[in-house]
Length: 346
Image 1: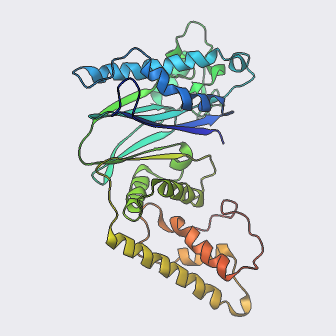
Image 2 (image 1 turned 180 degrees about the vertical axis):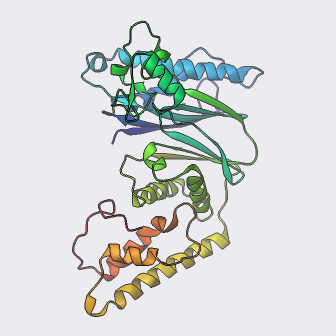
Image 3 (image 1 turned 120 degrees about the vertical axis):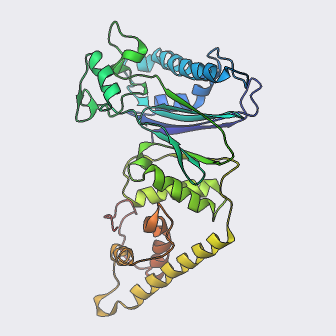
């Protein structure tokens, strides 16, 4: 696992009502991702910017964030294993810095942050891919090329921390290299309708759109107030939808987030009971054909018109319910592999 994350509520230097959250998707090793998870915030706060709520402070915070990214990237370059090429790792970084009045969305790479505001997607960061016109222009100006949507046919992201093999073009500054460590920073004023922020690496976004993930998380918040369980449900659902990349997700709930609804809880219980009954029926009516395998059961249920499935997650988000009943009723089954190894039944 090359992913890492940061979650700090109450920042130092008197910023007790500020918070910082981040997800790092490492590649070619975990060295850079792990160091950034422990030290990126420190570099941002020590960048010389004035963090406060006075007029003009927003631009100062943005400057501090940018300086922090450039500084940590230059600092890590001097690590002996990275300098000598013994470690060639890199990492994306997607972060949100929360002040009492603003949300600072910070992105470097192809991980993504999404804000749910008033029940729908209110903002999302833009992935930094080599095929994006602005990114491609910088890569070509640095003497590189974009082949098969990768930098020099190799790296799938155009901005990242680390990846120093792509940051050694003479005569070019750090933000002009084949791969840039410069973050894109977008600032939104906080409003009462802000519900939650999701930070996730591309393993999540490969199989879920911004809208699907927002809808799914909202539906889970109506039936569960355990954010860790909701995060695990997101990862499991994406696994069952076919994602094969590493997956990390951080869910940050804001004061306007949905609260548990008795009606939603009742519908969820009814849905689970319906699915349990259908599995029992399918296994109980198998006759001479024998007990169907799990994939056959999943495909049979998937062909039905089932009401009240979680929006955005669909039946994939209920696979664990189906599997639990199947395994209970068929304890002597042959091992069929893990959920991720089974062919996609949907």
